[in-house]
Length: 215
Ligand SMILES: NC(=O)c1ccc[n+]([C@@H]2O[C@H](COP(=O)([O-])OP(=O)(O)OC[C@H]3O[C@@H](n4cnc5c(N)ncnc54)[C@H](OP(=O)(O)O)[C@@H]3O)[C@@H](O)[C@H]2O)c1
Image (tube, rainbow, N blue to C red):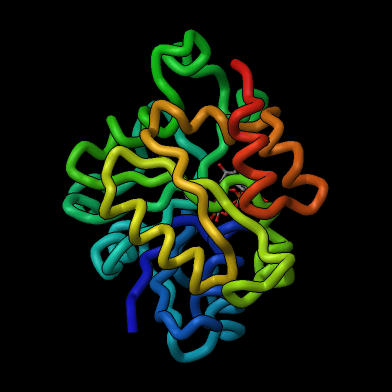
């Protein structure tokens, strides 16, 4: 059994926790308000889940999911995340997050920025273009005709491999959209992202929409 640390217990973090525990993993999950506030979620998830602080979740995970919007002042536990694959579900939303000049100018993608903030971790962007409430409902077994595909991006091939494995276990095919500098192709407003609001697409459609993205 793999232990997955999950930082963020909102729409995305809680849904990944539900999907991961259903797939046989254990999860250690954190929010910003403290483990005690997660008691109802832990009761729902069962014995393979526990709540912790963000640093404890990072330390406990064989790998870690960050389901928290990125901030310019890094608030993630850098030390505990060192040496680990970090799956980043963040989407850059200036109305919510404020403007990041280095992203707005095209100097770097928001996920390169996360990688810069976590220099000893292996960041992989994943689960960013599926609406969280649909994660369990849209899951399909391998080979199903209507299985959706999700893009991942990383500068680390072993992080891509891990994300592909996890997405497969949770019911999704993967298209590798690496490196992180290409991750803008799945950001808010792109064809890939817009299609996710209409139910997503399979591998062929995802490849088409990735190629159609413009900056
Ligand atoms: N919602 C979607 O369908 C969806 C889909 C794909 C990608 N995304 C992206 O994924 C990210 C998370 O989205 P969401 O919808 O899950 O957001 P959300 O519902 O607002 O949840 C954010 C979570 O992060 C926690 N948090 C914030 N700062 C933290 C910190 N410093 N340490 C630990 N936990 C912290 C919050 O804890 P508290 O509640 O205790 O403050 C909350 O549990 C965003 O970047 C979003 O754009 C969202």
